[in-house]
Amino acid sequence: MTFAEFRRALSAIFIGLALTMSVAPAAWAATVATVNGEPISDVQVDQRLRLFRMEGNNTGRNGAMQQLITEAIQLQEAKRLGISVSNAQVDEAFLQIARNLNVSRDRLQAMLQQGGVSSQTLQDRLRAAIAWNAVKETAVSPQVQISELELDQQAAQQIADFQKFDYILKEVIFVGGGGRSGQANRYRSSFAGCDSAVELSLAYTDVAVVDIGRRHATQMPDAIARELAGLNVGGISKPRATEAGLSMLAICQKVQAEDLTFVKGGLREDAGGDAMAKEAEAYLERLRSQAKIFYQ
View 1 (cartoon, rainbow, N blue to C red):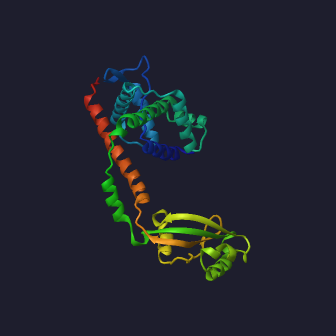
View 2: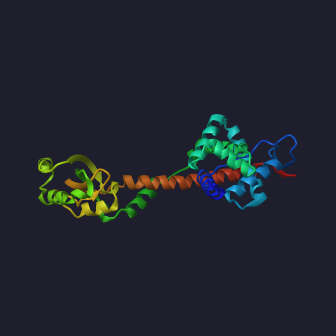
């Protein structure tokens, strides 16, 4: 793996995980800042700056310093809340990064060393990320409120006419894929309803009839939901290629029913993530405003 590939992969990992932290200062290192009495050394800043360069982060020395300050605040808050991070958790996170980069742990350490970065620098940043995630779950998540009324309104706006049906379905699968499209189409043209689906299948080889049960249109891909919306009870969809073979869906029952459950589930997840991020950012900003930060 080249350094360019490492930079892209590692940068993406840390953006996704919002990772942070620093190494403990060496005894001979000069202190360049303190956060609530906790020192940050010039060695830590230099190490973070080197890691930034490997990741393609161009915020420079000040960016490295500010990240270390943020990490110190995050770890101090975790300690205040009684949250600790074990070495095993950090080791597993470090190993997961190696897996994501498709390299061994030793290879990841060697790549860091080639960039002049101690593996401890990355491990310490992982420790802070794990701790801050725990802080968010403990102190931030309970503050996140999501309006069910707003979710209902948003979901209703997203539901199209073809998604306002509830079905009981059977699936007819012709094992073997595209080579059996002729048989699948003949089955479809002879189909006379769910009650005779199994009996009709006996005239063909390698055909399975499976009870799907109840499904709302919002649980299906739009293309399938559109097609089923245009069929009546007793109808069957056109053959579609799937991993199992050629699949057709037969409509055993169909009623008009607006169900917002599944659409709301996706909206709730999105809204919860956005609200959590905003609340966590505000929480961290409050901690930072209250912290005693001195530069030396």
